[in-house]
Length: 142
Image (cartoon, rainbow, N blue to C red; front, side, top):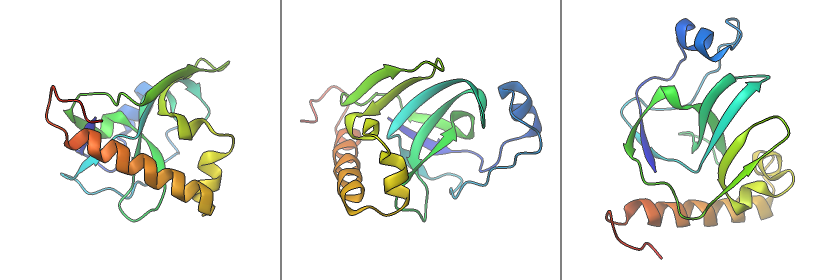
């Protein structure tokens, strides 16, 4: 799945519709018009930060890890979901489609903190999802 950035900031209307605090102004390191590979998708219900919305995991421009960003800041350019995504839900009613590596305990924290093991796993995920997204529609990327 690929998305193209159409905005780097949430509007007050988008925040209101998500149920997100109007005081929160997350800054995302994205380039308008750039296409990003979606690493995972989460459907949030009453999250403490974003409220209720769909977020995509993408690698921001100058970061070596992935970030959850509301889908409303993107336009879907390739709607094919990754065949390597695994579905899970939790007690907070969040539903996720993520690569198995993302479900490892503290994976995102370890990746953000620069753990070598997490960086290697993330590199494998990026390579696999890049290959999938480069495959022509209807082909088997494996």
